[in-house]
Structures are given as structure tokens and as C-alpha cells.
Length: 203
Image (cartoon, rainbow, N blue to C red; front, side, top):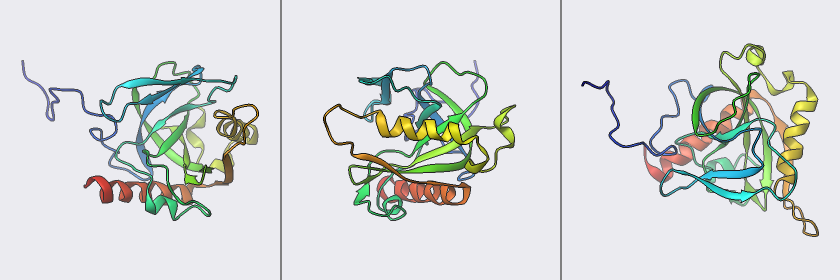
């Protein structure tokens, strides 16, 4: 039996072993950890690359979009410098929320996503941007070019999720959305996270 090249004998790590895609920062690959149907927070284990249960959601909040990260990105000094008031990047790959008209009800999938904007989220002093994108060739959202083209209520749902999904009754909410930014700034954030990755992990 012959295999196409490159052929992986072992499963590549989704953060370090997958490509970001040849059209980045405009179109990127996204590794999906959570679907809009999940009431449990899943996250890739940084050592093994396998999806692990991070925590059951305490509240009734569920993500309104597919939610994951962009391979070979890292939120460090360059990402921090794009966010007012941030003391550092959050030390994770860049988060991405992907709109899809057709329900995708499983995680641990890779998809191509076109970047259209983002949420500038400050979480306990750390830069924790949420890039907003659409599934490429989506039959409904495919004409969206900027986050401002979405119905405002959809973006409100994203804001609500990210400002409540860590909320513990009786404790101060340390997550806040500073602003919603469009396509051009989102490109800069993706580029900064790519350079942060190169700085820390190499090319």
C-alpha cells in the first residue's frame, strides 16, 4: 500500500503539528474543541494533543458558534501589545469562533475559516482575543466580509457567552469585552499570534 506525502505515522498534535493554512491571516485552519451543543467545556491537552474535559459549565451558557483555536499561533507579547490594559497574553493558541449555517455537531474537526473580525477580551488582565470567522463557502454566511455585516444579535450572543461562561455567583467577573473589531484589526491579531508562536516555538 502506498500513502500520499506527507504521511503521518502518528497523529500530529493539533496545536503544533497542523498547518495554519497557506492563506493566513485571511483564511486559517481552525481546530474545533466545542460545538454550540456542548454544556461541557472541552480543551486540547497541551502535552498529548487529545481533547480533555476541562469542566462542566456551571451556568446554562453554551457557545453560540463552533469554538476552537488556530494551529501554530500563540498569545504572547505581540498580541498583548494590541490590547489596551493587558499585562500579558494568555499563553494559549489564538481562540476562534466560526459561524456555520449548517449544524456541525462534533468536535475535533479541522475546518477552513475566513476571518471577519473579533472580540477584544481582557480576562484577569490577560489578552484573550476571540477571532470571529465564517466557514469558507458557507451557503448563508459566505458573503460576510466584516463582523459589522452580521445581525447585531448574533454578536451580542458571543459577548454574553464570553462574559458569563466563567461567572461564579458571588465572585467578581474578571472577564470583559473591551471592544468589537473588524476584519483589518483581526488580521493584525492573527499575524501577531503567528509571530508570537515563531518567537516562542520557532518557525
